[in-house]
Amino acid sequence: MMKVFEANITHQVSDFLRKKLNRTTTVETANQKMFDACGIKHFFDSEVEFEALKEIICSTENLVEEPDRDEYGDFQTNSDLATKVAKFLKQGSSDPKIIIEPTCGKGNFVIASLSTFKRIEKIFAVEIYKPYVWETKFNILQFFIDNPDARKPEIEISHFNVFDFDFKQISKEHSKEEILVIGNPPWVTNSKLSSLESGNLPTKSNFKNHSGLDAMTGKGNFDIGEYITLMMFDAFQNSNGYFAFLVKNSVIKNVVFDQKQRSYKISDLQKLTIDSKKEFNVSVEASLLYCKLNETPEFVCNEFNFYNHSKLINKFGWVQDKFVSDIERYKHSNDIDGVSPFEWRQGIKHDCSSIMELDRVNGHFVNGLQQEINLEEDLVYGVLKSSDLKQTVIDKTRKFTIITQKKVGQDTSFIKKEFPKTFNYLHKNKSQFDLRKSSIYNNKPDFSIFGIGDYSFAPYKISISGLYKNYFFNLVLPQNRKPIMLDDTCYLLGFDKLEFAAYTHILLNCDMTKEFLQAITFSDAKRTFTKDILMRIDLLKLSMQFSGLKIKDELDEINERYNLNIKLDKWDEFIKAMKPVHSQQLTLLEPVVKYKKRRT
Image 1: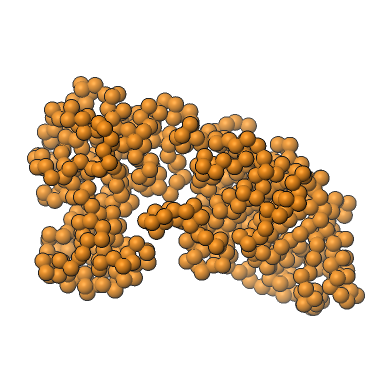
Image 2: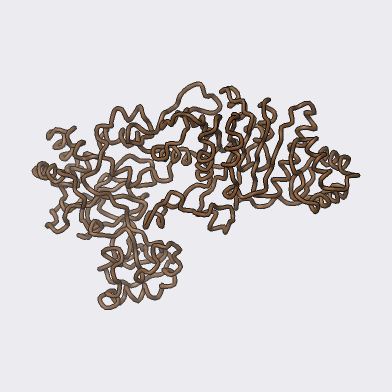
């Protein structure tokens, strides 16, 4: 195998080009010869390219190391998988005249289409990476050398950034022909590409128009494959034909979610799961997203196994105005789908763990740099991470953290006056805080944190990890009479009454809640649980499923196991607090209910 323009080329193709172009003197003649041979328009973009290729193929082999393609989120589809996708589409009655491949890579989907569909009249392929443009051309030429009697459609391969290419013009020019949009767009997010200073980005990275804190803290981040998918729907939803993209499962979920608002003219949405480890040697959950174009909009997606798509695995999408991950399971638990009367919150965020997270060793605090430090105790609180949420009731922590504010944006100058040891420590490490990259810290007081408020200082909390697929909620009690904090991988409800927290804990850990959460969460999501998910649990509706006797039995079990003394006498008050829905947390100003220490 040789390398020409950093692109793989077989000796057979090289020999063919050498013989075909040996006595050719102009790029116009060369392009006509190549069009006759393989249907590619403008095989050479310039006289310079033409002369350079002739010189290379007439010289010794030029081996070049494969470049790093991480910048482009590049996971090339192998020819076998591309062929299987094309055959799947043909079995589903797709027989297009126009093929669109917006990120063609080395051209395996183009080759698969040429070998599978017999009515193709034109192929449009776009690729930002020039060596892949050449490799696609060489692979197409190889195909027609191997298949001289094959139909030769007109092929346009454009060296272009997909975000700047005019796909809508193709849609207008071929509005009457059946089309197929096929491909494997990059499996990478805009933030990843930005960190690599890649040019392979759309002009507006916040394409879903998230505003304020949402955009700054993650919701503005999106998958490039998702952006390109929606680009294709924008351009071709009114075209007759089909769509088939290999994308991450999270992209498919987001596309189906956004379909409620966008109402693209797509139907028969299917998610066909693939073995990403086998096909791409990556540990990413991915599937083939398939749908029909120019149809009445549909809002549900059927899930199958790509390799054996005869049996329906799952159905997810919109049930009226609710988005669910398992429609069948949802039917058994949808009674509690509503709005939580208490507001779920995310834990504290500081992005400076080596300085802010502490261990207590022999009575002293030790930071992440293994430095022993001397602090006042006042601003130090126990903190729980997702990995700590293993027990039913938690009143001890292995880690501690410094809480510099009581609410977001609070002036931190008081620390210097009231807690000089803590201030000296923080000030000594100010450079570490200044290195924080998130824009949420811009123009904020020194040592600022986020995810902090009155709820953080509530003595009793209900917590759950956002990261783990564990449908279990914890009851968090004070540690040494100080409230325990949670980090930003966790979600919490804060209460000033132990009874309210205990009642909530019982409701959230019942079978109906678990089934409901299983019906609305996606196991392959980066965060299984989010605030949006948790806010859908209507605790008031859920409480109607319980008798007083059942609640009392659950309380007795908690009391006996953890040596507590929680009674049912505030149940009516608890129910009243949930009517009507409160927009704020319960007040934190009432006296803390005393509790007995847990047995050691």
